[in-house]
Length: 131
Image: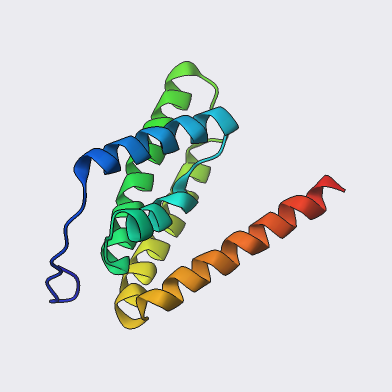
């Protein structure tokens, strides 16, 4: 349920587990987060409504980021300090609330288009950084 609207949809759980297993393998193999691929996988391959996919993606990324941060603290490779964690946490919590609010106000196709534009811009920035 999002903003009082109940969504009814079905998805193939076996396909979902296989896709996310492959996504996890690919993300760890390439050294990327994989978060930018979660929403398109949920929407286009598992038939999730965009608002549900966005919220699910936020939850997945939050849990994985927390776990990764704890591992880095545990093994002693995190040297950025608690102030950086607090600042990032405040930004994430604020951005997540704003994103959840906007995802109810903006049509799904515009959310997907915005994500695509953001990914293209990140790709361009990465290409520029190479040179």
